[in-house]
Image 1 (cartoon, one colour):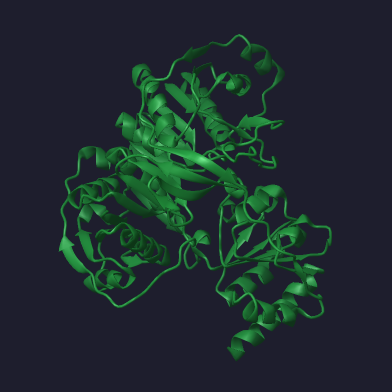
Image 2: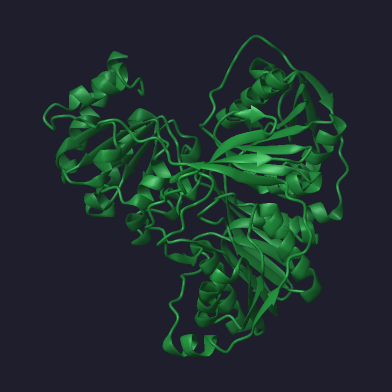
Length: 245
Length: 324
């Protein structure tokens, strides 16, 4: 069974997010980049399924050469090989389009992504990829099992969960619960260095949207401290001043 | 510029997020000068569909099909895309709920439309079409320019107010065509977390963290939430150790919320947690550590033992509720 796992790199979750003085870009100076946490969940589930079903796990990334450290980390965790599409990931459509162009040629049975990246949080790559490849897609999936040519997934919906069945091939976006991420071991780190990493150039694609300006959220004003022996004052302020209750 | 809104329903009923999306779409159409059409998929009463006029919809395209009573993202996307073609809509508004998220990207690809994934305001400019959204899980904001002819706006729930006026929408039956591919995946079972208010739509959220010392102490959190008509949430460590279910985890790698009032009990306020709640309009922090970073992000703070403060707060809220 051929698995493809789409990974992207994002700032470490502890990063204080700042932007360049002209506000046109994220300030990446001194920032530690990691594999997007949801992509790591997807990767782990693909590796678990490969262990029982056999096959290969390929990771794919749309990014410049700087992402290769994180691609090697994915190989260290256990992916067999990697593809990097040599371009800056702009919007979700562009990323999905580039991955679809490569994936169509290689015929994967299962394509997994994270449910969203924690930088732009759009959460659209799995659905767009499905549309572009003419495959069913299920996102925010907390469970994934494969039995023959049928996959059973559990996904989050408004106010609950839904069990969905779909035929292979398909695309799924991983949410927490699908797997517990693995830490690479020494052997994995050693073998990752020699695993194949293919670099391909991007295909021509229209740009439909772009982020032109960035800003930090407005800071809150002073916190009003209330005496723990006068909790009634809080209720009063929430009603009269904040008009929140 | 004609606007089409996906008026989502759950088991035949609209929710606040539906009315927000219609109010938003109607305002867009007013600014750009165009018609406002809502598309409804599933069995909603005529009365409820006509009532969408109160929020600004002029017409409702009603899609009824026995195969569509369960939410099916692909078939729903087909219906929305065909409705937008029929109406020559230039802007498609979809509330960014779970189901909205599952259709927005599909509609965007089918219409070759640029998508604003999680708009938090009306466009700051219509030419170029520019809308603000959150990024970096709430730690940043970005202005997205959509350059395609047709545009899809995924509107973050709780970020635009519901506008009402007199009005009644006309209803037109609409029968889009579906392909087999639209039914490639099938719903086998749905599990409802019954009676609970969805976190992303809640006006008030009561949340607690490690300061509560154990899952057995959540009774007072739930009681306070119930009194306030609030949803309950929790911090990441609490979900990770299994004290609370993962779907309650708010923060950078959990759910991002923006309620009117967020009450945080025994949560220190790590940067990842703040990212998920920073757009709350009013934040109350109850913590026994006066150095807790959360106080810097709060509007109101009580430095004290949660096990003493919360029961008192419950009594005060009870008094308040009986007086109002």
